[in-house]
Image (cartoon, rainbow, N blue to C red; front, side, top):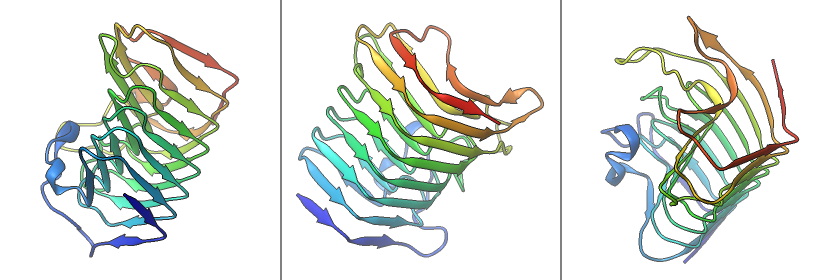
Length: 212
């Protein structure tokens, strides 16, 4: 399935029922299950939860724009996910602890040459456990302008450029040649460029620029 230069837009507020950690995925603007798909030059605007929710393998996204997402703008759980040369703006507008892009168990995935900004928690979340989701390659991205904002649970401690949770991962993940800037903190919460949660393993981190 291929989508090229399409536009998906909703009125302010978009879909309802924003959920935590992928809950409420049925409320996503576009969901890809079972079959691979290609998105090129597509614009996603005003999703109440995720703009794009992927569980299928072999999905690629390039030159896409995601803006004003209530939850995570992009959630990828399928193997061989590729997202390149894309823009993510204003994520977590309804749920401040959401991330711009989530790679969760997305084995052999790539996130590269993207610009992700203007959220309240991690620009990128990379998660895996027990060998799943390994070989994530996050490179040549610009992650910036993350500002904490309290929700019903208080302020997220994951206010950072990238949040990594790869407990007992058995294969290497890579974070290299990224620029991370303007990551704020509040009352001791957040402010990190790269934040590895307790037990995170199997990361190679090289040649990144983290400032301000």
